[in-house]
Length: 103
Image (cartoon, rainbow, N blue to C red; front, side):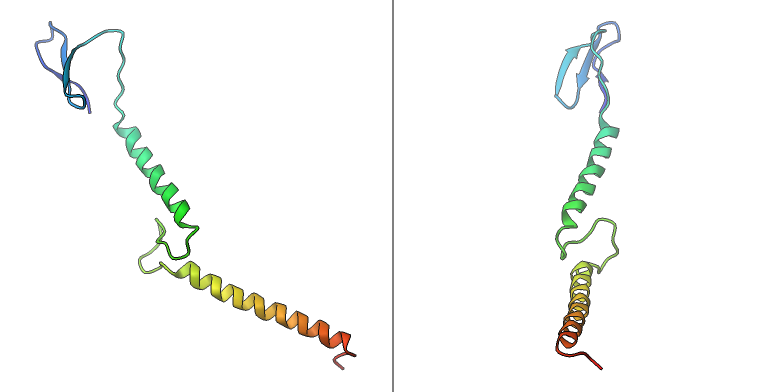
């Protein structure tokens, strides 16, 4: 938020609404408006929260569709079932080959 002139321009008095005080305007002080930067910081905070939520399979992700809360959890279950099946087949094949062959 910017400064507000509290008196005629000749007196160089300004009002800072964030601080709630009246001060003398000086030539050697530069003040920047941080409102656009705060919007970018809020966006970065949302992205970092989403990054932390990506570690939890039940968490809602920032840019995902509604109803996709458990999608990562179910994908992990199906992936582990598939890997277990493939590893089980490989172990069974090695066992059969070591016991005299399949043929």
